[in-house]
Image (cartoon, rainbow, N blue to C red):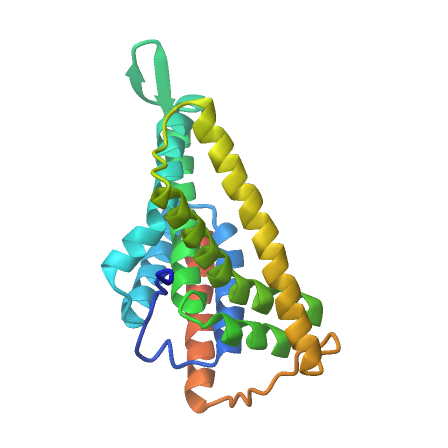
Length: 251
């Protein structure tokens, strides 16, 4: 039985059709500007812009929520603690604890910034195939070793996951039931050890196969990207929107 692949997030529309190099540069510029914003209004506007990009890319709300769950758990802790730890004008009292308006505003800004950056990453980069992303990074001047590492990692993740599923199925076939005892922890330790050993053996076989095909330490890019008029318009539009965010933050 084969392992079920991890589902990828898919998009459609005008944004997804843009050049991968533009999307990588756009998400970097968006993240840098969003992180540097200093007011709740501008950070909330950045979140609105990220949501607009996600909607324009045709992403499903279910996929976005599933990928944001881990982030929102951490953000919940920030929202509950920062108002009580940052000094400033009192907002409300909870027993002997006093929440400040400055802590509330800081927590909201962190919440908006984090969600905006993650949404932009999901929309602009998360919808790219790993191979296309690696090629785009190579075209932008990222060192070959880093792009090779990305491409190899994207290739091996599915293989390691499939090996993990096979080992788990073997454990179930032997009637293993996890409990809170030392035997369960030992079994999980053996599982991780066997996964590492088999992953190493698989990597060595892949390396031997690559050498048989003439691999000499470099992967050649065979893509032929073309910069279109839509890419230029997209770059100009994003530059205007980011400039508007900076102006709103400083006004």
